[in-house]
Length: 130
Image 1 (cartoon, rainbow, N blue to C red):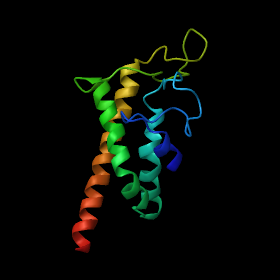
Image 2: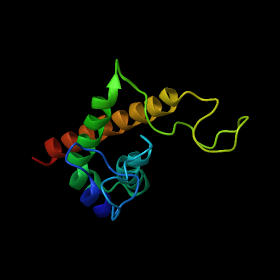
Image 3: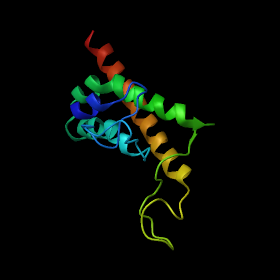
Image 4: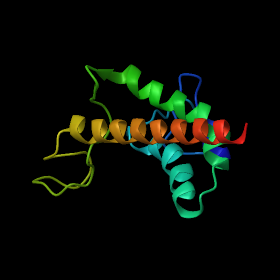
């Protein structure tokens, strides 16, 4: 989580590789790779009820979702590799049969849902402890 947070760009994007020791010309190719920045703390919370990662990284998670929103048109994200390595007529790689927008928007939706759950949990816990 710390490597991802340290690698997050000022526009909110979490690079494909963290820590990002590659040059800035290595641009992220997949909207879903940054999703691990939300999935890791969410799955940790689901596993043991610990809100620490959600609490510590909430602002960065929000910045990432805001980044995806900035790439969306009418709430549809249409960039990245899509469902890469789907089986199709060509060699595996970038999506062949599944529209990139379907996969990228599904990740965007789930990231937004996780962020909403985290916000509710953190607000609920704060109110209960006061």
